[in-house]
Structures are given as C-alpha cells and as structure tokens.
Image 1 (cartoon, rainbow over the protein chains, first blue to last red):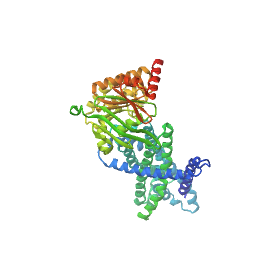
Image 2: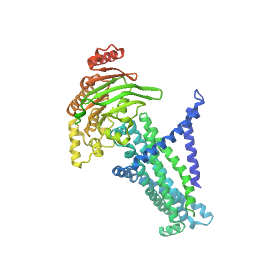
Image 3: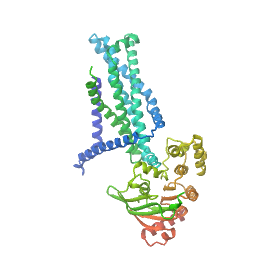
Image 4: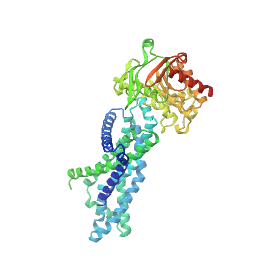
Length: 289
Length: 257
C-alpha cells in the first residue's frame, strides 16, 4: 500500500532526524560513554514529564469553572482557520488516489470498483491521517511557538501570578479544541477528497456524481466511517498535548521557542502515526468487517 | 483594612529559605521581614538570586528548605486553590512587564478583573480606564503591547498588577532597560502608588536611583546570603568590602549620568 510505505518513510526520516540530533552527544570526544546514557535519560525524562503534564492537565481541567470563552476562541483558531488547508490536502489526496488506482484497476478490468476504493480508502485512512498531519503541522507548530514564547517572556508566570491556572486556561482549552475540531476537519477533508476523486475520475471517463456515490457507498458502511472519525479525537489529543507540553517546557529565549515549535511538529506527527498503528489494530478487533 | 494585625504581623516573612538549581546554590538560608506598608528594596548583582526570591514569595517556584509566610500564612504548605487566594492579594510587576501579547493594553489590565471580580462590562471598562489613567496610559488603551515602548509597558504592567487592589506588591527590576528620565518617572509613580494604597512592597533592583526614591529599607544580596540590611545611610557607612564596592560603583555611575 502507498500509505504503509509513506509511514515507513516518515518513521525512517524521523529516526534519522533524531539520531542526527543525538549525534553531537554521541561524538567520540570526552563524553563517549555518556552519550547513549544521556539520550536514554533524556527520553525517560520526556516520558516522565509528559505523564506528569497529563496528570496536572486532567486535575486542572476537571474542576469548574470552565473556560468556555477561551475554548471557543481556540476552536475558531484551530478549526476554522485550518479548514482551507485541510480541504485542499483532502482534495489532493482524492485526485492522487484516483490517478494511481485507475491504471491498476483497468488492468484487472475492475474499473467499477474505483468509486468504492476511493471512498473507502479516504474515509478509513487517508482522510484522518492527512488531516492529522496537516493539523499537526499548522496547529502543533502554532501552539508550540505561542506557548513557548509566552513561557520565555514570563507571560505564563504572569498568568499564574494572577491566580489563574495556566493548565486550565491555556493548555486544557487548546487540547479540547483540537479534540473537538479534528473530527470535523476530517469530515471536511473526506468530503473534499471524495469530490476531487470523482472530478479526477470523470475527466478520464465521465461518470455522474450520483452514480459515483451510489457505487462507492454500496461498499462503505457507517461502521467504516465512525471508528475512523473517533480515531481522530485521539489524534487531536496527541497534537494538542504534545504542542502544549513542548511549549510549556520551552526555555532559553527565541532559540528555545524555535526548538519548541519544531519539536512539537516532529513529535506530534510521529506519535499520530504510531498511534494510528495501534488504533487501526483496535478498530479491526472491535469493528470487524 | 487589616488594622487589627497592623503592628505585630509582617506582610512577608522569609525564614531560612534556600534554593538551588542543580549544583548552584542561589539562595542560602535567607531571612527577610517586610512590615505592613513598608517597602524593602533587594539589591544585588545580576544573577544573585533576586528575581528567584520574588518568584518564591508568590509561589511560582518552591524553596528547597525554609518557610515563607504571607500575611501570617505559610505558603509552602498550601494547596493550589489556597495559594491562588493569597496570590489575588499580591501584585507582581515582571522584569520585562510580561504583558499578554495577544491582548490589547486594556484587555491586559482587565484580565485579572475578568477572572476574579464579578462586574458588568461597563463597570469593568470604567475601572480599567481609571487604572490606566492613574499610570498615565489611557491614550494607549487600544494598542497592542508590541506597539508600545518599554517604559509604557512597565506602566501597563503596574496597572495590571494594581487591578485587584493588592496589599502586597512585588516589583522585579522596575527600571531595567529604561532611560534615566523614564526610569525616574517610573520610580516616582511607584512611590506615589505605595503612599496612596499603603502597600507592602519588595522591589528587586540594581539601580541605586530606584533605591533612593522608593526604599524604606534595603537588603543587599551576595553569594546567596543577605550581607547587610538597613537604611541607605547604613549601607553607605558599611565596612563590608562588597557593600562598599557596590556603593562606590553606583556613586561613580551617578556622576557619569
């Protein structure tokens, strides 16, 4: 499958980036033996840190009063403003899927399968993952940079000093907004992908939209859509939580803000893909075909 | 306001407070008392732990050892909810003002009011305008923090810190990075506000002009400890080599200006 090779390429690239980052520490100078140990300690610290972060987050978010105003603002920021980008990415995937699969299906004389193939692959996998990756690029970087710069300019301290819990006001609102908006964005991406898939298809071999949808939806069921949409709530949590966590632990001036922003994108994309593997396995178990 | 405790209770009391970051000991068994209505200036070199001391007082960091009391309540033992109750009574001016840069000047000052006071929109608006007028910033109400100068940011930061009418003010380098004239105006403003509102304050600075204008008492920090505590005259007459060097250098600076 195309997607699995993409995943492998992505994981490969990330591992390369991580090891390239770690290389100076592993360099055979005076810290020859400390290198790998430092890396391990850093990794354990990171996981410990994000665990503690989640505990603080849940205990802050669970108690009233809730930050409705800020939540709405973040939903607008994260949701509405990502919509054009997500729609475009979804449409592009629809076109690409149509271009790629048509030739293969023609070889087997199974062109009539094309609408179903496009719709199922978009709804089940391409739509959610592309949306999550686009959002982790746009929103993850945005949250990482915004909270990072608030951290290094003491604005987060100022919020805390004025007796407002930043985990409640800044972090919980952003994460909940990501979790709420990602399913909606995914539906928009699915819609654009299917529409663009039909458009690309009909240019080669004219087919009415109605027929395309009727043929496609014969094979697809609500059971295909629902778990895939629920899955994106988890992606939303990952993007929001990692973006906020990297932002809140930023230090060291503008350079720190840059690091927070970059690492938020890299780590949230990586964890979205890794979580996808687990979630797909779970979906297959709990929603058998 | 709190006259029954006026005489026998300190507003802020630090007892044997220590704080380290890794190997580096920043504060080593510090004792400090600030009486109600008194302004104590903490002097010291850059990096001597002055700002850390303020952050310990408001609970943004916790001490490794020792006790910190605000209005007779030990804050190191409190839950976050109880600590926040005390924080509402403490105004904090940050070194670089730390204005929220996604909010306008007016919204910055309104932030603590919006969070902690139930009032109608026009009532809050009026209150914010009054605060901004008090610090001479009513014209900049609609501007974003990025569009105003450093001195103006300090004024807005002061207005925001005053919004909840705190009894205690903590000021971190109120004149750092300002020209001498603006710095003088800010010092004067701080002095006036202290007198109007009878606040207890801790002012962290290395600027002797601030000290001359605002301080009732001075504590000087060096290498994690308080080397001297007293009035400006006490400091000027001190035999301690660090104190006399610091005073000498700041006199030189004054004649330069």
